[in-house]
Length: 546
Image (cartoon, rainbow, N blue to C red; front, side, top):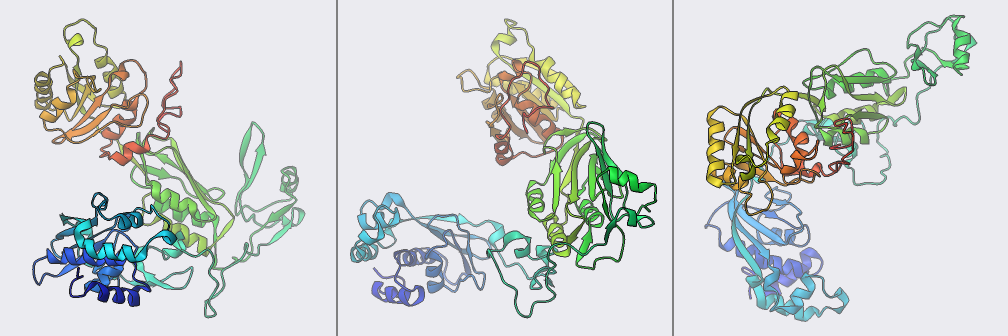
Protein backbone atom coordinates (compact mmCIF):
# COMPACT_ATOMS: atom_id res chain seq x y z
CA UNK A 1 0.00 0.00 0.00
CA UNK A 2 1.38 3.40 -0.99
CA UNK A 3 2.27 6.12 1.48
CA UNK A 4 1.01 9.25 -0.23
CA UNK A 5 2.80 9.65 -3.55
CA UNK A 6 5.44 7.04 -2.66
CA UNK A 7 5.40 3.29 -2.93
CA UNK A 8 6.18 1.49 0.29
CA UNK A 9 9.69 0.65 -0.91
CA UNK A 10 10.32 4.24 -2.02
CA UNK A 11 9.29 5.56 1.38
CA UNK A 12 11.47 2.96 3.10
CA UNK A 13 14.48 4.32 1.23
CA UNK A 14 13.54 7.94 2.03
CA UNK A 15 13.18 6.97 5.70
CA UNK A 16 16.53 5.22 5.66
CA UNK A 17 18.32 8.30 4.30
CA UNK A 18 16.56 10.73 6.66
CA UNK A 19 16.33 8.66 9.84
CA UNK A 20 19.38 6.44 9.50
CA UNK A 21 17.35 3.25 8.99
CA UNK A 22 13.74 2.45 7.95
CA UNK A 23 12.30 2.39 11.47
CA UNK A 24 8.94 0.59 11.73
CA UNK A 25 7.52 3.54 13.70
CA UNK A 26 8.47 5.94 10.93
CA UNK A 27 6.86 3.74 8.26
CA UNK A 28 3.64 3.43 10.26
CA UNK A 29 3.86 7.15 10.95
CA UNK A 30 3.85 7.77 7.20
CA UNK A 31 0.47 6.07 6.88
CA UNK A 32 -0.81 8.00 9.88
CA UNK A 33 0.21 11.39 8.50
CA UNK A 34 -1.30 10.65 5.09
CA UNK A 35 -4.53 9.45 6.73
CA UNK A 36 -4.86 12.75 8.62
CA UNK A 37 -3.95 14.80 5.52
CA UNK A 38 -6.60 13.06 3.43
CA UNK A 39 -9.33 14.30 5.75
CA UNK A 40 -8.34 17.97 5.74
CA UNK A 41 -10.03 20.39 3.31
CA UNK A 42 -8.08 21.08 0.13
CA UNK A 43 -5.64 24.01 0.38
CA UNK A 44 -5.97 24.43 4.14
CA UNK A 45 -3.04 25.78 6.14
CA UNK A 46 -2.44 23.18 8.79
CA UNK A 47 -0.09 22.41 11.65
CA UNK A 48 0.80 19.19 13.46
CA UNK A 49 0.65 18.04 17.06
CA UNK A 50 2.64 14.86 17.78
CA UNK A 51 2.20 12.92 21.02
CA UNK A 52 5.42 10.91 20.85
CA UNK A 53 9.04 11.95 20.46
CA UNK A 54 10.01 8.68 18.73
CA UNK A 55 10.00 8.36 14.93
CA UNK A 56 6.60 9.99 14.41
CA UNK A 57 7.94 13.58 14.21
CA UNK A 58 10.19 12.48 11.35
CA UNK A 59 7.18 11.20 9.40
CA UNK A 60 5.53 14.62 9.78
CA UNK A 61 8.66 16.41 8.55
CA UNK A 62 9.04 14.07 5.55
CA UNK A 63 5.44 14.35 4.34
CA UNK A 64 4.41 17.89 5.28
CA UNK A 65 5.89 21.37 5.58
CA UNK A 66 5.59 21.13 9.37
CA UNK A 67 8.73 20.95 11.46
CA UNK A 68 9.89 21.93 14.92
CA UNK A 69 12.15 24.53 13.32
CA UNK A 70 9.30 26.54 11.79
CA UNK A 71 7.10 25.79 14.84
CA UNK A 72 4.36 24.32 12.66
CA UNK A 73 4.89 21.03 14.48
CA UNK A 74 4.51 20.79 18.24
CA UNK A 75 5.73 17.70 20.07
CA UNK A 76 3.79 17.14 23.29
CA UNK A 77 5.38 13.91 24.49
CA UNK A 78 2.46 12.13 26.13
CA UNK A 79 3.89 8.72 25.31
CA UNK A 80 0.99 7.92 22.94
CA UNK A 81 1.67 7.05 19.31
CA UNK A 82 -0.66 9.62 17.79
CA UNK A 83 -0.52 12.61 15.46
CA UNK A 84 -3.05 15.35 14.75
CA UNK A 85 -3.16 17.68 11.76
CA UNK A 86 -5.36 20.73 12.27
CA UNK A 87 -6.36 24.10 10.84
CA UNK A 88 -3.76 26.54 12.17
CA UNK A 89 -6.43 29.20 12.80
CA UNK A 90 -9.37 27.23 14.25
CA UNK A 91 -7.59 24.18 15.72
CA UNK A 92 -10.08 21.82 14.06
CA UNK A 93 -8.56 18.71 12.56
CA UNK A 94 -8.07 14.96 12.75
CA UNK A 95 -6.19 12.76 15.20
CA UNK A 96 -4.76 9.41 14.07
CA UNK A 97 -3.47 6.92 16.65
CA UNK A 98 -2.27 3.33 16.61
CA UNK A 99 -5.11 1.27 18.10
CA UNK A 100 -3.90 -1.80 20.09
CA UNK A 101 -7.32 -3.43 19.60
CA UNK A 102 -6.66 -3.55 15.84
CA UNK A 103 -3.31 -5.31 16.08
CA UNK A 104 -4.60 -8.86 16.65
CA UNK A 105 -4.61 -9.57 12.91
CA UNK A 106 -1.00 -8.45 12.64
CA UNK A 107 1.05 -10.50 15.15
CA UNK A 108 4.48 -9.18 14.18
CA UNK A 109 3.33 -5.56 14.44
CA UNK A 110 1.72 -6.35 17.79
CA UNK A 111 4.90 -7.99 19.12
CA UNK A 112 6.95 -4.98 18.03
CA UNK A 113 4.53 -2.26 19.16
CA UNK A 114 3.68 -3.81 22.54
CA UNK A 115 7.34 -4.82 23.19
CA UNK A 116 6.34 -8.49 23.51
CA UNK A 117 9.39 -9.82 21.66
CA UNK A 118 13.04 -8.73 21.97
CA UNK A 119 14.35 -6.86 18.93
CA UNK A 120 16.86 -9.60 18.10
CA UNK A 121 14.02 -12.13 17.83
CA UNK A 122 11.81 -10.02 15.56
CA UNK A 123 11.30 -11.05 11.94
CA UNK A 124 12.09 -7.71 10.29
CA UNK A 125 10.98 -8.66 6.79
CA UNK A 126 7.69 -10.02 8.08
CA UNK A 127 7.24 -6.87 10.16
CA UNK A 128 7.74 -4.68 7.08
CA UNK A 129 5.35 -6.87 5.07
CA UNK A 130 2.64 -6.55 7.74
CA UNK A 131 3.10 -2.76 7.96
CA UNK A 132 2.69 -2.45 4.17
CA UNK A 133 -0.37 -4.72 4.13
CA UNK A 134 -2.04 -3.14 7.17
CA UNK A 135 -1.48 0.48 6.12
CA UNK A 136 -3.63 2.86 8.17
CA UNK A 137 -5.99 0.00 9.07
CA UNK A 138 -4.31 -0.42 12.47
CA UNK A 139 -5.18 3.15 13.43
CA UNK A 140 -8.18 4.89 14.92
CA UNK A 141 -9.21 8.26 13.49
CA UNK A 142 -11.20 10.92 15.34
CA UNK A 143 -12.01 14.61 14.88
CA UNK A 144 -10.33 16.95 17.35
CA UNK A 145 -10.19 20.60 18.27
CA UNK A 146 -6.72 21.52 19.48
CA UNK A 147 -6.39 23.72 22.57
CA UNK A 148 -5.83 27.42 21.87
CA UNK A 149 -2.37 27.43 23.45
CA UNK A 150 -1.10 25.38 20.49
CA UNK A 151 -2.45 27.81 17.89
CA UNK A 152 -0.39 30.59 16.39
CA UNK A 153 3.20 31.45 17.06
CA UNK A 154 4.60 33.38 19.99
CA UNK A 155 6.84 36.24 18.98
CA UNK A 156 10.34 36.47 20.37
CA UNK A 157 10.66 38.86 23.28
CA UNK A 158 13.60 41.09 24.01
CA UNK A 159 16.95 39.34 24.16
CA UNK A 160 19.04 39.68 27.32
CA UNK A 161 22.49 38.49 28.31
CA UNK A 162 22.37 36.13 31.28
CA UNK A 163 24.47 37.52 34.15
CA UNK A 164 25.47 33.97 35.15
CA UNK A 165 26.52 32.21 31.93
CA UNK A 166 26.91 35.36 29.75
CA UNK A 167 24.83 33.84 26.95
CA UNK A 168 21.83 35.41 25.19
CA UNK A 169 18.30 34.25 26.10
CA UNK A 170 14.64 35.46 25.85
CA UNK A 171 13.92 38.10 28.45
CA UNK A 172 10.56 36.51 29.27
CA UNK A 173 12.42 33.63 30.97
CA UNK A 174 13.35 35.79 33.95
CA UNK A 175 16.37 37.53 35.44
CA UNK A 176 18.67 34.70 34.34
CA UNK A 177 18.29 32.08 31.62
CA UNK A 178 16.36 28.86 32.22
CA UNK A 179 19.54 26.77 32.16
CA UNK A 180 20.99 28.76 35.03
CA UNK A 181 17.66 28.46 36.85
CA UNK A 182 18.36 24.75 37.11
CA UNK A 183 16.92 23.39 33.85
CA UNK A 184 20.31 22.68 32.25
CA UNK A 185 20.65 19.16 30.76
CA UNK A 186 24.38 19.07 31.48
CA UNK A 187 25.96 17.45 34.51
CA UNK A 188 29.05 19.56 33.81
CA UNK A 189 29.86 22.33 31.36
CA UNK A 190 33.35 23.74 31.07
CA UNK A 191 34.03 27.43 30.59
CA UNK A 192 34.51 28.69 27.05
CA UNK A 193 37.81 30.42 26.29
CA UNK A 194 35.99 33.64 25.55
CA UNK A 195 34.02 33.55 28.79
CA UNK A 196 33.89 36.78 30.77
CA UNK A 197 35.25 37.14 34.28
CA UNK A 198 35.37 33.80 36.11
CA UNK A 199 32.77 33.04 38.72
CA UNK A 200 33.92 33.55 42.30
CA UNK A 201 35.01 30.46 44.17
CA UNK A 202 34.43 30.01 47.89
CA UNK A 203 33.66 33.24 49.71
CA UNK A 204 34.98 36.78 49.44
CA UNK A 205 38.14 37.91 51.20
CA UNK A 206 37.02 39.50 54.47
CA UNK A 207 38.92 41.29 57.20
CA UNK A 208 39.20 39.21 60.36
CA UNK A 209 41.07 40.35 63.47
CA UNK A 210 41.49 39.11 67.01
CA UNK A 211 38.89 40.23 69.49
CA UNK A 212 41.37 42.59 71.16
CA UNK A 213 42.28 44.19 67.83
CA UNK A 214 38.61 44.69 66.98
CA UNK A 215 38.26 47.56 69.45
CA UNK A 216 37.36 50.75 67.56
CA UNK A 217 36.18 48.82 64.48
CA UNK A 218 32.62 48.13 63.40
CA UNK A 219 31.19 44.62 63.37
CA UNK A 220 30.61 43.29 59.88
CA UNK A 221 27.61 41.17 60.87
CA UNK A 222 25.25 40.39 63.72
CA UNK A 223 26.76 38.12 66.36
CA UNK A 224 24.38 35.86 68.26
CA UNK A 225 24.64 34.87 71.89
CA UNK A 226 23.03 31.57 72.84
CA UNK A 227 22.10 30.85 76.45
CA UNK A 228 20.50 27.39 76.49
CA UNK A 229 16.88 27.50 77.56
CA UNK A 230 16.94 31.30 77.95
CA UNK A 231 17.80 33.25 74.83
CA UNK A 232 19.18 33.19 71.30
CA UNK A 233 19.51 36.73 70.08
CA UNK A 234 21.98 39.11 68.50
CA UNK A 235 24.24 40.51 71.21
CA UNK A 236 26.11 42.65 68.68
CA UNK A 237 24.69 44.10 65.49
CA UNK A 238 26.18 44.76 62.07
CA UNK A 239 27.76 48.24 62.03
CA UNK A 240 28.08 48.43 65.82
CA UNK A 241 31.37 49.96 66.99
CA UNK A 242 33.16 47.59 69.35
CA UNK A 243 34.59 48.98 72.59
CA UNK A 244 37.14 47.67 75.07
CA UNK A 245 34.26 46.65 77.32
CA UNK A 246 32.95 44.34 74.61
CA UNK A 247 36.10 42.18 74.48
CA UNK A 248 35.28 40.09 77.55
CA UNK A 249 31.68 39.50 76.49
CA UNK A 250 32.76 38.45 72.99
CA UNK A 251 35.22 35.97 74.45
CA UNK A 252 32.56 34.60 76.80
CA UNK A 253 30.48 33.99 73.69
CA UNK A 254 33.35 31.96 72.27
CA UNK A 255 34.40 34.62 69.76
CA UNK A 256 38.16 35.15 69.76
CA UNK A 257 38.23 36.49 66.21
CA UNK A 258 35.81 39.00 64.69
CA UNK A 259 34.97 40.08 61.14
CA UNK A 260 35.06 43.84 60.92
CA UNK A 261 33.96 46.32 58.27
CA UNK A 262 36.43 47.07 55.51
CA UNK A 263 36.20 47.64 51.80
CA UNK A 264 33.23 46.01 50.03
CA UNK A 265 34.38 42.65 48.64
CA UNK A 266 33.25 43.57 45.11
CA UNK A 267 30.21 43.57 42.85
CA UNK A 268 30.37 39.81 42.42
CA UNK A 269 29.19 39.44 46.04
CA UNK A 270 25.90 40.45 47.71
CA UNK A 271 25.59 41.00 51.46
CA UNK A 272 23.06 38.76 53.24
CA UNK A 273 20.83 41.65 54.31
CA UNK A 274 20.76 43.22 50.86
CA UNK A 275 19.95 39.86 49.31
CA UNK A 276 17.20 38.84 51.70
CA UNK A 277 15.51 42.24 51.45
CA UNK A 278 15.31 41.83 47.66
CA UNK A 279 13.87 38.33 48.11
CA UNK A 280 11.23 39.55 50.56
CA UNK A 281 9.97 42.25 48.18
CA UNK A 282 9.11 39.55 45.64
CA UNK A 283 7.82 37.00 48.11
CA UNK A 284 5.31 39.09 50.04
CA UNK A 285 1.90 39.33 48.42
CA UNK A 286 -1.48 40.64 49.59
CA UNK A 287 -2.09 40.20 53.29
CA UNK A 288 1.59 39.56 54.09
CA UNK A 289 3.92 41.99 55.83
CA UNK A 290 7.44 42.04 57.28
CA UNK A 291 9.78 44.38 59.14
CA UNK A 292 13.03 45.98 58.01
CA UNK A 293 15.96 46.08 58.35
CA UNK A 294 16.74 42.35 58.18
CA UNK A 295 18.44 40.75 61.15
CA UNK A 296 21.31 38.30 60.57
CA UNK A 297 20.32 37.97 56.92
CA UNK A 298 16.81 36.86 57.88
CA UNK A 299 13.31 38.26 57.39
CA UNK A 300 10.17 36.87 59.01
CA UNK A 301 6.76 37.29 57.38
CA UNK A 302 3.51 37.66 59.27
CA UNK A 303 -0.17 37.91 58.42
CA UNK A 304 -1.70 41.38 58.35
CA UNK A 305 -5.09 39.89 59.24
CA UNK A 306 -6.63 36.47 59.73
CA UNK A 307 -7.04 34.59 56.47
CA UNK A 308 -6.04 31.59 54.37
CA UNK A 309 -2.32 31.14 53.70
CA UNK A 310 -1.82 30.66 49.96
CA UNK A 311 1.65 29.62 48.75
CA UNK A 312 2.94 29.19 45.20
CA UNK A 313 4.43 25.77 45.93
CA UNK A 314 6.21 25.42 42.58
CA UNK A 315 7.99 28.73 43.12
CA UNK A 316 8.86 27.78 46.70
CA UNK A 317 10.52 24.60 45.43
CA UNK A 318 12.46 26.47 42.74
CA UNK A 319 13.70 29.04 45.24
CA UNK A 320 14.84 26.44 47.75
CA UNK A 321 16.68 24.61 44.95
CA UNK A 322 18.86 27.69 44.46
CA UNK A 323 22.15 27.63 46.40
CA UNK A 324 22.80 29.66 49.56
CA UNK A 325 19.17 30.71 50.16
CA UNK A 326 16.14 29.28 51.92
CA UNK A 327 12.50 29.93 52.70
CA UNK A 328 10.46 27.97 55.25
CA UNK A 329 6.70 28.40 55.59
CA UNK A 330 3.67 27.15 57.41
CA UNK A 331 1.38 24.79 55.48
CA UNK A 332 -0.40 26.28 52.49
CA UNK A 333 -4.19 26.19 52.82
CA UNK A 334 -4.26 26.70 56.59
CA UNK A 335 -5.92 29.59 58.42
CA UNK A 336 -3.36 31.99 59.92
CA UNK A 337 -4.14 34.60 62.53
CA UNK A 338 -3.50 38.28 62.01
CA UNK A 339 -0.15 39.36 63.43
CA UNK A 340 1.18 35.80 63.61
CA UNK A 341 4.35 34.64 61.85
CA UNK A 342 3.85 32.47 58.78
CA UNK A 343 7.22 32.15 57.01
CA UNK A 344 10.87 33.14 57.07
CA UNK A 345 13.59 33.56 54.46
CA UNK A 346 17.29 34.15 54.65
CA UNK A 347 20.57 34.18 52.79
CA UNK A 348 22.69 31.43 54.32
CA UNK A 349 26.26 32.82 54.09
CA UNK A 350 27.26 36.35 55.04
CA UNK A 351 27.88 37.11 51.36
CA UNK A 352 26.35 35.15 48.51
CA UNK A 353 27.72 35.22 44.99
CA UNK A 354 26.03 37.41 42.42
CA UNK A 355 25.30 34.21 40.49
CA UNK A 356 23.41 32.59 43.38
CA UNK A 357 21.62 35.86 44.08
CA UNK A 358 20.47 36.19 40.45
CA UNK A 359 19.41 32.56 40.34
CA UNK A 360 17.28 32.93 43.46
CA UNK A 361 15.61 36.08 42.13
CA UNK A 362 14.87 34.34 38.84
CA UNK A 363 13.32 31.42 40.71
CA UNK A 364 10.94 33.83 42.44
CA UNK A 365 9.90 35.43 39.16
CA UNK A 366 7.65 38.45 39.59
CA UNK A 367 5.95 36.95 42.66
CA UNK A 368 4.23 36.83 44.95
CA UNK A 369 5.20 33.65 46.72
CA UNK A 370 3.09 34.22 49.85
CA UNK A 371 -0.43 35.62 50.17
CA UNK A 372 -3.01 35.65 52.92
CA UNK A 373 -6.47 35.55 51.38
CA UNK A 374 -9.25 37.15 53.43
CA UNK A 375 -12.16 34.95 54.49
CA UNK A 376 -15.42 36.39 53.25
CA UNK A 377 -18.48 36.55 55.47
CA UNK A 378 -20.60 33.94 53.73
CA UNK A 379 -24.36 33.60 53.88
CA UNK A 380 -24.61 29.89 54.58
CA UNK A 381 -27.63 27.67 54.11
CA UNK A 382 -27.54 24.25 55.78
CA UNK A 383 -29.51 21.29 54.46
CA UNK A 384 -29.68 18.12 56.55
CA UNK A 385 -30.90 15.04 54.69
CA UNK A 386 -32.22 11.81 56.15
CA UNK A 387 -35.70 10.41 56.60
CA UNK A 388 -34.93 9.33 60.16
CA UNK A 389 -33.99 12.92 61.09
CA UNK A 390 -36.92 14.41 59.16
CA UNK A 391 -39.40 12.21 61.06
CA UNK A 392 -37.81 13.02 64.41
CA UNK A 393 -36.66 9.46 65.05
CA UNK A 394 -33.14 10.82 65.52
CA UNK A 395 -32.32 14.25 66.90
CA UNK A 396 -30.44 16.45 64.45
CA UNK A 397 -26.95 17.38 65.57
CA UNK A 398 -25.59 18.43 62.20
CA UNK A 399 -26.88 22.00 62.27
CA UNK A 400 -25.19 22.87 65.60
CA UNK A 401 -21.88 21.32 64.42
CA UNK A 402 -21.91 23.17 61.10
CA UNK A 403 -23.06 26.39 62.75
CA UNK A 404 -20.17 26.38 65.24
CA UNK A 405 -17.58 25.82 62.52
CA UNK A 406 -19.08 28.39 60.15
CA UNK A 407 -19.39 31.09 62.78
CA UNK A 408 -15.86 30.42 64.07
CA UNK A 409 -14.61 31.58 60.67
CA UNK A 410 -16.74 34.73 60.66
CA UNK A 411 -19.66 33.62 58.48
CA UNK A 412 -23.35 33.33 59.34
CA UNK A 413 -26.09 30.73 58.97
CA UNK A 414 -29.09 32.34 57.25
CA UNK A 415 -31.33 29.27 57.25
CA UNK A 416 -31.36 25.52 57.84
CA UNK A 417 -33.64 22.83 56.46
CA UNK A 418 -34.20 19.11 57.10
CA UNK A 419 -35.34 16.93 54.21
CA UNK A 420 -36.17 13.22 53.90
CA UNK A 421 -34.27 10.93 51.53
CA UNK A 422 -36.35 12.02 48.59
CA UNK A 423 -34.69 13.47 45.52
CA UNK A 424 -37.41 15.97 44.63
CA UNK A 425 -37.82 17.19 48.21
CA UNK A 426 -34.09 17.69 48.64
CA UNK A 427 -33.93 19.64 45.37
CA UNK A 428 -36.87 21.81 46.46
CA UNK A 429 -35.08 22.67 49.73
CA UNK A 430 -31.88 23.54 47.86
CA UNK A 431 -33.82 25.93 45.61
CA UNK A 432 -35.43 27.49 48.66
CA UNK A 433 -32.02 28.17 50.24
CA UNK A 434 -30.86 29.69 46.96
CA UNK A 435 -33.92 31.95 46.90
CA UNK A 436 -33.09 33.09 50.45
CA UNK A 437 -29.72 34.35 49.19
CA UNK A 438 -27.35 31.63 50.35
CA UNK A 439 -23.95 31.97 48.65
CA UNK A 440 -22.69 28.76 50.29
CA UNK A 441 -24.86 25.69 50.79
CA UNK A 442 -23.65 22.97 53.14
CA UNK A 443 -25.49 19.69 52.74
CA UNK A 444 -24.99 16.89 55.22
CA UNK A 445 -25.43 13.12 54.98
CA UNK A 446 -26.77 11.25 51.98
CA UNK A 447 -23.33 11.36 50.32
CA UNK A 448 -22.37 7.66 50.33
CA UNK A 449 -23.13 4.89 47.84
CA UNK A 450 -26.29 3.55 49.51
CA UNK A 451 -29.38 3.40 47.21
CA UNK A 452 -31.24 5.81 49.54
CA UNK A 453 -28.47 8.41 49.38
CA UNK A 454 -29.91 10.76 46.78
CA UNK A 455 -28.43 14.07 47.93
CA UNK A 456 -25.91 14.19 45.12
CA UNK A 457 -28.46 13.50 42.31
CA UNK A 458 -30.75 16.13 43.85
CA UNK A 459 -27.97 18.70 43.73
CA UNK A 460 -27.39 17.81 40.08
CA UNK A 461 -31.10 18.45 39.44
CA UNK A 462 -30.55 21.97 40.79
CA UNK A 463 -27.74 22.64 38.32
CA UNK A 464 -24.65 21.45 40.19
CA UNK A 465 -21.52 22.19 38.13
CA UNK A 466 -17.76 21.58 38.42
CA UNK A 467 -18.53 18.86 40.94
CA UNK A 468 -15.66 17.01 42.62
CA UNK A 469 -16.76 13.98 44.62
CA UNK A 470 -14.37 12.03 46.80
CA UNK A 471 -11.10 13.14 48.32
CA UNK A 472 -8.09 11.33 49.85
CA UNK A 473 -8.90 12.34 53.43
CA UNK A 474 -9.91 10.14 56.36
CA UNK A 475 -12.39 10.90 57.78
CA UNK A 476 -14.21 12.75 55.00
CA UNK A 477 -13.58 10.73 51.85
CA UNK A 478 -17.09 11.12 50.43
CA UNK A 479 -17.05 14.91 50.51
CA UNK A 480 -18.41 16.86 47.52
CA UNK A 481 -17.60 20.36 46.29
CA UNK A 482 -19.10 22.23 43.38
CA UNK A 483 -21.20 25.24 42.41
CA UNK A 484 -24.77 26.04 41.50
CA UNK A 485 -24.50 29.24 39.55
CA UNK A 486 -22.41 31.55 41.76
CA UNK A 487 -23.28 29.66 44.95
CA UNK A 488 -20.68 27.31 46.39
CA UNK A 489 -21.80 23.84 47.44
CA UNK A 490 -20.10 21.66 50.05
CA UNK A 491 -21.49 18.19 50.64
CA UNK A 492 -20.41 16.72 53.97
CA UNK A 493 -20.66 12.96 54.67
CA UNK A 494 -22.18 11.59 57.86
CA UNK A 495 -18.75 11.06 59.45
CA UNK A 496 -18.81 14.74 60.44
CA UNK A 497 -21.43 13.80 63.02
CA UNK A 498 -19.09 11.40 64.78
CA UNK A 499 -15.59 12.82 64.30
CA UNK A 500 -14.67 16.24 65.62
CA UNK A 501 -12.38 16.99 62.66
CA UNK A 502 -12.94 15.84 59.05
CA UNK A 503 -12.28 16.94 55.50
CA UNK A 504 -14.99 19.58 56.04
CA UNK A 505 -12.56 21.51 58.25
CA UNK A 506 -9.94 21.51 55.49
CA UNK A 507 -12.24 22.65 52.68
CA UNK A 508 -14.43 25.24 54.42
CA UNK A 509 -11.65 27.87 54.85
CA UNK A 510 -10.57 27.38 51.23
CA UNK A 511 -14.08 28.05 49.97
CA UNK A 512 -14.48 31.11 52.18
CA UNK A 513 -11.20 32.43 50.75
CA UNK A 514 -12.61 32.12 47.24
CA UNK A 515 -10.37 29.26 46.13
CA UNK A 516 -11.69 27.36 43.11
CA UNK A 517 -10.69 23.83 43.96
CA UNK A 518 -9.44 21.37 41.35
CA UNK A 519 -9.00 17.61 41.42
CA UNK A 520 -5.28 18.26 41.84
CA UNK A 521 -5.94 20.40 44.94
CA UNK A 522 -7.90 17.58 46.51
CA UNK A 523 -5.34 14.97 45.49
CA UNK A 524 -2.58 16.87 47.29
CA UNK A 525 -4.54 16.58 50.54
CA UNK A 526 -3.67 12.89 50.59
CA UNK A 527 -0.35 13.67 52.25
CA UNK A 528 -1.33 14.54 55.81
CA UNK A 529 -4.97 13.67 55.17
CA UNK A 530 -5.06 10.80 57.67
CA UNK A 531 -6.49 11.91 61.01
CA UNK A 532 -5.13 10.12 64.10
CA UNK A 533 -8.45 10.67 65.93
CA UNK A 534 -6.76 11.68 69.16
CA UNK A 535 -8.82 11.61 72.34
CA UNK A 536 -8.03 15.29 72.87
CA UNK A 537 -8.32 16.96 69.45
CA UNK A 538 -5.91 19.87 68.99
CA UNK A 539 -6.73 20.70 65.34
CA UNK A 540 -5.40 22.83 63.67
CA UNK A 541 -2.31 22.45 65.89
CA UNK A 542 -1.76 18.88 64.69
CA UNK A 543 -0.53 17.05 61.56
CA UNK A 544 -4.01 16.63 60.03
CA UNK A 545 -4.15 18.27 56.62
CA UNK A 546 -0.45 19.19 56.76
